[in-house]
Amino acid sequence: MCLLLPYRDIRLFYVDYVCFSALLFYYICFLGLVCDDIYSRRDTGYPGCHSQRHTPPPLSPLSHIYNSYKEKEMATQNNFCAVNLAFLLVFVLIVPVDASSDRTKTVEFNVKPGGVVHTFTEAIREYECSFTYASQGGTNEQWLMSVGLSDDDRLFSCSVWRPQGKSYLFFTQFKAELKGTKIEYANAYSQTAAAGQSDMPLKPEEFTVGDSTVTHRDGKFSAQLSKLTAIGRTRHDEL
Image 1 (cartoon, rainbow, N blue to C red):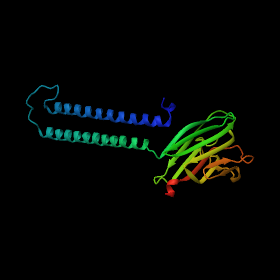
Image 2 (cartoon, one colour):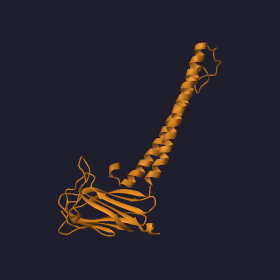
Image 3 (tube, rainbow, N blue to C red):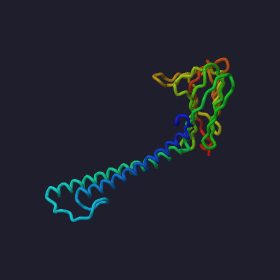
Image 4 (tube, rainbow, N blue to C red):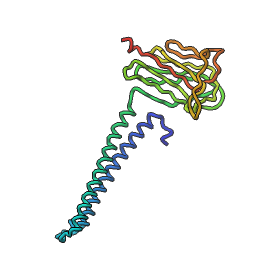
């Protein structure tokens, strides 16, 4: 069922799952320590939850050695549970921070053939990336769009690609637009590095790069597109 959820819902589901697992692990450790304490009391003859109160017999030297071993074993178990619980708590604290990051975002979407113009858009703060296309042949393909904002808010990046490496659709047009930035670098690929394949960029004459857009060239574009990348400098850099 998790595979049917969008990436953001999957991350929230994952965080809830980790939190539940941590609480369950803590409960199991607690029960283990309580039961171990009860059984150790039975072994040494001291009163436990279900034992009757009585005077313990005199301890032999071997009994002292055995009891010392049991105490060390209990201490080891306590330390083990404490260390694992601490690790899980730290992990639970880290995951929400990573999942709630507002500087990167990767979203899955379908590229649909049929010759109709479609647009897919994602944004971080006031910076937006849109991918407009029309394609023919085949069936829907699952693509990814990843947008990111640098720590100093000076660079905004956008990548659109097919994870399998190569699209089998024929694109009649495409355009990527970055709003709120001026493009400093852009490239388009007919094939991406996946499954032993390497990146295969389009020829420079197949597309044009403007201040805010990357667009196909009519009559030059070979109709093959599998990846599009653009990096723009934000207006924040001008302040």
